[in-house]
Image (cartoon, rainbow, N blue to C red):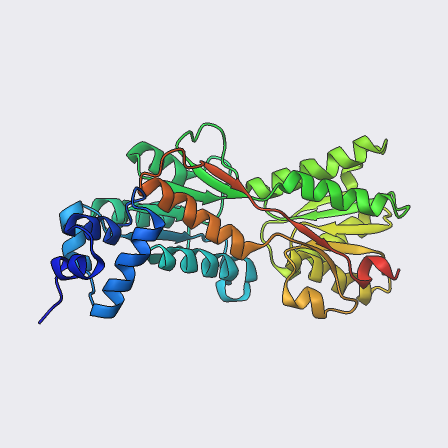
Length: 335
């Protein structure tokens, strides 16, 4: 015979309504009472009926996750894998499930959102990227569906919750680090320019040069259409044909690896650094200096922001900034 809420309440020495509030993650219940009730549930083997709970409250305790078409090689892209791990861990800890949808185009991303909302199968949505004129955010704003985005959104998306690194400052610091080593002609290889992360890192690069009295040379800048290694290789080739340089920064780890391949192939090694701290950047020859953006923590914070707002927590923050960590390796230390 199934254990009831009343039996859990009697065991824990609280009212049945208190047990119900704990089951529904009501933030007004003290941590001490929550622990007492959850221990009673564990001892008695009580398992809430998720379906009945959702019907009663009009809630599904499910978050929709849109994996962007830009992650075409999803399982070779550590950022998306680690961010998904972080948000899944946080959601599970808070009693939420994740419904994943992988798109092949921007139009399909919006189509999945329409299904989520029309069928009422999620309480909120997490977007993995933020881009200029973002169609997903525009649709979610129109429908007033709660959502969080990884990446700082445009100011017009006033209902967005967001989590990001300070990509401007991270790039500014990285460029300054190379300038302090006496390097002056720093090539920049970037990802797709429609993404806010690319725009902010480009601004950080430009401002660092200006602050140090160095004229910005557009021939040293090459932005790619994807984050693939081939783009880094081609970008390095393009810059090499345009002008001279004494160092390279890539805004993505895979672009950095492609650039490194080109430099080694043409016996033109110079100090080179990237972002994202992939396993391959640690094992490359030479190991790459990198900026660790902590993608798992980005994912956890994204899920936490959304769940806090869905739970009605008063004065819950609308955004979070995750620190970056500069990791210097041989690619800038030994050359």
